[in-house]
Amino acid sequence: MNSNETVLQRFDLDGDRLPAHVAVIMDGNGRWAKSRLLNRIKGHEQGAETVRMVVRTSREIGIPVLTLYAFSSENWQRPQTEISALMRLLKRFLRSEKADMLENNIRFNAIGDLQRLPGDVRQAVDYTMEVTRENTGLLLNLALSYGARDEITAMVRAVAEDVAAGRLRPEDISRQVVSDHLYTRGMPDPDLLIRTSGEMRVSNFLLWQIAYSEIFVTRTLWPDFSREEYLSIIREYQKRDRRFGRVTS
Ligand code: FPP
Image (cartoon, rainbow, N blue to C red; front, side, top):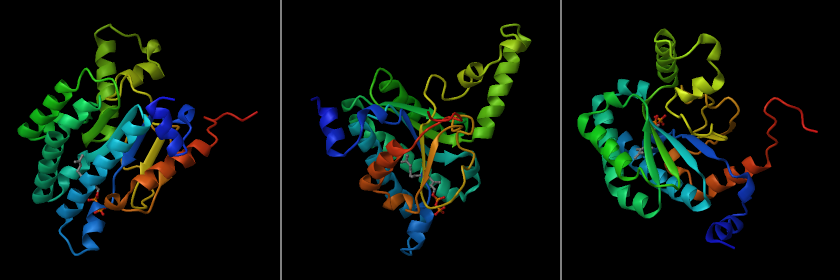
């Protein structure tokens, strides 16, 4: 038995039914802080610890792709102090996790309108992508300045340009062509979408890609989301009957 099988057995997980891609809407940092009479930024700091735990756990059990919604295109409308704190946290996270990513074969990738990020953050993002490029284990995707409607709009524009330039015929536009023009090209669609803090919304996250995702909403606020809860959601996911619109025989 290899070490991954031992880990799966210990956590009572079925290695043949692991989600190929887990996507997470990390919500509730502000409420976590408020309930403790703390500044919202403290909530984000504690949230960054949960990010570390989810990355570590995903890697340990052998999840191939993990996408975390760290900053939405709408988040630019938050107060400048909060935006700056989130950007600082992000930079700190990339710096502190680099060694761990290299040691554990994690490939880092960012999806979203990265041009809008401050120069130093953009540099840190590019650098981390570059140094982990050859890794073949967990693909850690951070959604930064990300909005699915922007992503879909950019996809339509790119496809239209291909048609206008004669590289593509309208009748050849398929689901595959659409997927290939999204930020997530080449990745499996999320099998599992988790949202913390109890809100029943998808908040402009991976709208094309989550068509058949199994959705789990927990009332737990992101900073309180634990390894045990993450593992129990994956165990629950493994019990779900996924039909993709078909009937089961
Ligand atoms: C939602 O909580 C969370 C965010 C907008 C940002 C997510 C950021 C982190 C988890 C920490 C930093 C990330 C990394 C990758 C180091 P909210 O502020 O909307 O909470 P609320 O709805 O309770 O106000």
